Image 1 (cartoon, rainbow, N blue to C red):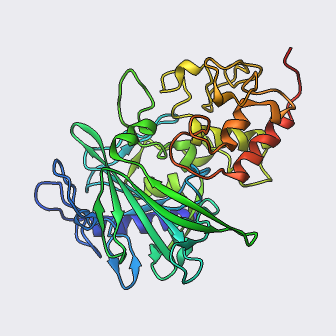
Image 2 (cartoon, rainbow, N blue to C red):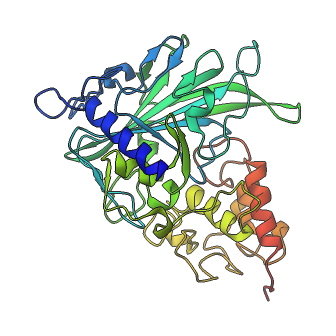
Length: 389
């Protein structure tokens, strides 16, 4: 009951904040800052969208902008991610139990990649990927304290009449605004690991064309889709200013989502970092978010025959004793994608652990090996029974 009251109060606050528009339904309402839906033009500055204004030394959220997190997020070289969603007044997304929600024209989704600063040394950063349900709120309230974090890039997904468009913005050195940067970028950084070690790496901001590599999960339709806003990824608790609440319930109460069942009746991915949850569920959730958008029967990696979505139950499709379709350095000299009980003989583990071009998987979004994620998949394979003859 308490959560429901919070949801109603938030909905009222959002409605108050979104009570007027620019007259044509494309501008957001007044608030701490006003979001602007650009129906066709691509603004040079991120600030022209009005979603994430910088004020008082913080990256803040404009009125009506809702943060969210994923049960198991995709790994991106330990970058922290502040995810937000906004829709024009009077519109909402339609719930779907399995696919990305059907968002209305005018929806603006952002994902800001950042790292906590690890000292005064230029480029020295700490891992920013943290527990699910925290997001930007973990930085001391909504938004991010710019004295504590270094902003890298903000990716904007905007739903237009013609479909989704992806616009990548690279943050200026003074952290006051970000500029449209379609050609990608390489940012040298040094990661201060939790064990005291340091590791130099190059954060790679993908170019605009590379966005489709992950966001087109069906080669036949070529439809560009957001990856994270699915029921199973969002069905977790989040720390909102009014208290901790389930994200699906929160979005529904805010008027941003219709057709939503109670959270207990909706699918839910495991949190890969939670050892209290079953090992297989955590491993499958990790493979789903990191690999499933390509490794599905309609995706870019469909010809591999390796399908890693949550709906797959066929052991062969999951890689059990399955020989690779194409040989080469990507196999590491191994015969099967997964050899039960033998992670060191499994191509899947080899490719996740590799940082070699032509062998590493995923191909985009990282230059470092995700040691903790690889350890999870190793444990999953090691626990399997059976043999490959």
